[in-house]
Length: 306
Image 1 (cartoon, rainbow, N blue to C red):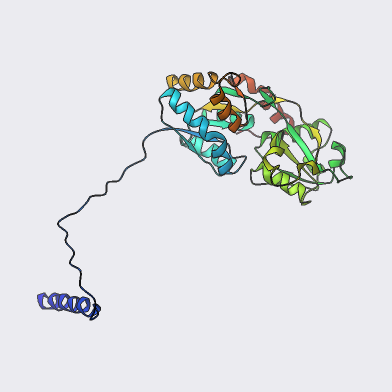
Image 2: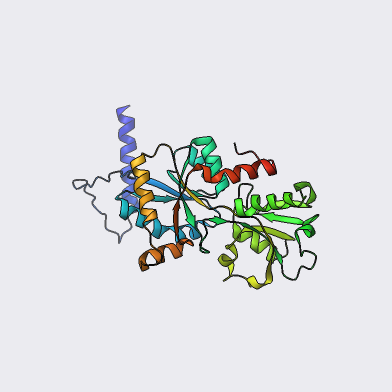
């Protein structure tokens, strides 16, 4: 056995020597000086997630300044995380991977029902309201759709089955007008992206679409949004909400909420800049009762929140 091992070693040495050409110098490697590379685990942080109604790039661009501000004001380490879909957002919250959720009111009610999420603040939209609504849109040159009734038998593209402004508010509006899901030729979803709904309508791939009010601004550098018309708007519903996991200590919740409520859009230019990036102008306190209208909508359209 020893002879066999010795033969292998000699063979390997010979191969190394033969691999050096006539003009090549062999390099002596010393293992006397070594540097240990230590594994550095990610430090614990409060995780913050924006429901992915836009691309991750857009989500980061809108919220990173706000995340940095909250970290500075509270002294907490807060890190933005990026679910790929609405379903991922819900799943990650349930798995404890999201501590602070910024979501539409329908997703909030799901999180509250399933995992004990609790509302901490609602945003004030750019129009000064703490509510928002959905819009039904079509191409301006589509003469076949000028009213809600004209949508019967047509192709509808919506954001996601759990999108509030991009689907559920519009569905509730249709139901109020005696129109149900069976009355459309098809209902397809855009993968959770408001942009995709607008582009699908603009390109003529679908007769009409549903988006949250304000989303047209997101694509104004890509298409001529004057070619899109608003056919109808839904009623107003409670706005987007920040909610926390029941695992987050109450003192941490209060620090974050206080920092949110301290933002001054009118008198502080730095605050205005970060809020402009996020596309809202401030916060109001909120609790679970604010979202009873969403629970009523769920009953109206026959959707399950579990």
